[in-house]
Image (cartoon, rainbow, N blue to C red; front, side):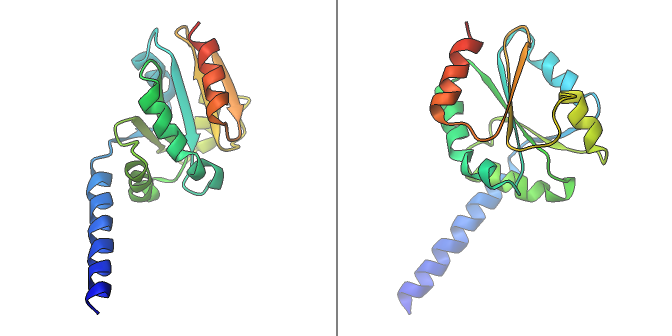
Length: 162
């Protein structure tokens, strides 16, 4: 009985920790014009834009890898963009906090016209996830659909940063 009560207490406190951390995640609203704002905020700097969703199994599996990349590659600005509905903000924040990505630059789609938002990012992107864009300091863009491995990221970073 005592063991069961301790387990329940630990689970409740762990949930509270994620909830408190999730509240600290700054989640910017991505609307028409936000992509240009994002580029302007990172002028002359390499950027990796990771587009994901809480409903994308591959995206969720790669969260620990994105956290590891963020820690190991401070020379690349890693920006996270959730394509989820604004109604899912709490869940998005919780996922980011749980995976140590609260201090990344985080955005969420905040416009009902998601096709327009996707088109502003890349007219050739039709919504497949995960989607990652690598932009060099001149913001020349290379987009990749699908999950990437650690080695894939490192190979692309070598090209991006040279």
